[in-house]
Length: 408
Image 1 (tube, rainbow, N blue to C red):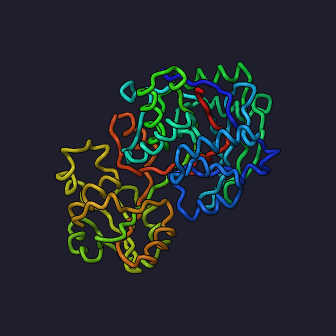
Image 2: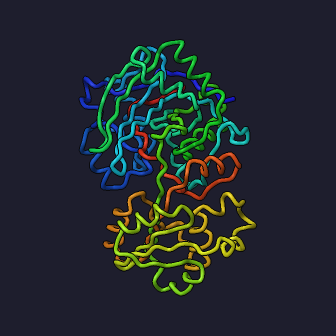
């Protein structure tokens, strides 16, 4: 049984910083140099100055302490859960994802109460560990999923007598949000009861969870035993899972290996990205889009049994049919004869990767379909891990709306 708690968060003092939109940021691991420059120019107090991988933990602690002393950040008087109504558009449709911030008692994955869903890049956990070690602060939440067919927590968020909106803002032209707090004792009790009956799945922030858990194991004081999380109900139709596409910038070519691909895939050259999107949307299993040298292709696996002989000793049937597994464990090593994991550029935008290709003028891009929620849950509860970047839960949870500081 998991345990969540309300807390007294640190929040930006809007009388000092103005529009909340100017001081929040996406999670640190999706911020490239161009975006970081934009965030730095948006406000001298943007949260990027506390979460960037380019900041030393010592400098972050000094800045964080100074912002508290100067009244830039203030701690709430009352404990509560904090919620977001995140309104966004995707593929021409409007969505509103409702979730909330809480503290979660840290548990080892062996208990089965907290479930990771994908492998991690260990170096990123080390980076976040040093930040926790020096600052004893969670600046960004771990994004987690629960299941509740009654939608009880969403009803509390929607109830104006239960939840108080304290700020509104935007993240982009297609993303706006309302942020607020839930402090009523009965509502807090109800939320805790609903979540306590659930297994929680890490959607995004595996590195942050691993770093917090390791710090607690290394320093097992009670105040170190909780981590800031953001919870959403995966049963909601407003929870979207997008794919993460792959660009290998060098050392690999689809066109040069097309004859080998033809043994395993039906290949169709198409007119452009729009055609790839349409064909991939019509096919649910083992279809990839490919871009190389200003040419677009759609490839469909002919027979899964051709792949199974390479994967059956390593993966269950549930996992081996994942497109990311076929790509990383079959296409890369057996067809392209490469192990490019350290150089792959990951992104959810095909257009972004095509722009990157045109700058470098080499390599190959693979476009993927998203995993379904049912398949995602089946794999999660099987105890197996998916390859890195199998999922992209859209949109990302902004950092900077609420901060958790623990200990002295």
